[in-house]
Image (tube, rainbow, N blue to C red; front, top):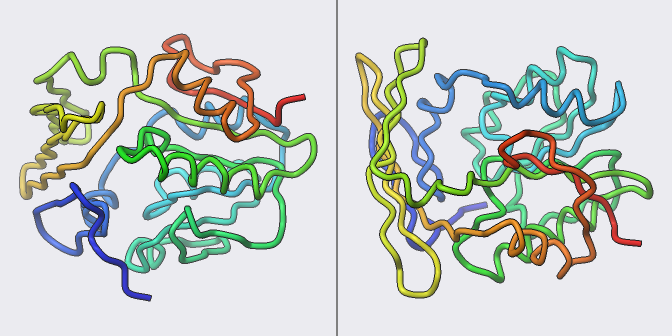
Length: 230
């Protein structure tokens, strides 16, 4: 299955670059962060999680260590080749139809901010399509100032310097975002299209596909747990 580069997305640096501009080697180096703890605190122990856009398993593997069962989905085979211990499925999220449902569906990595509105709707419909009765969808969203607080830089103890260099309007409500990831021995860049969403716009996007926010899991509102609307 050959996948074309997504419009407005590109990346540079050592190794394979995926259709959305992500670098496989870079994501293999990124630190885990708080995501596994956020997920574990929001769902039942041992839940079966459908992780959409799993990448190399940066979150997948810590979830497995916490006792969850994970079905990991990504459109890049090179990303999936790094997954260990989880069922791995190669597919674009928009097209995914496994014919089964899950306790938890996870849409992380700011995917809900897809630049094209119809792509965002397709991503959220895939979440609903695979959600078991009584289950929940966990969604990671951008911070309120994510597109305006630029340029900005963060240095991680791992040795990574991450920069959001610019966020330039594309003319239709989305922004072309340019990011740099610098380690002492290698540098990667990624350019991608992201659509800012206020809290109200985010909740409205969920309502379009029959979801509602149950609670925000973090003080900054960047993680939300949602379920099928009554």
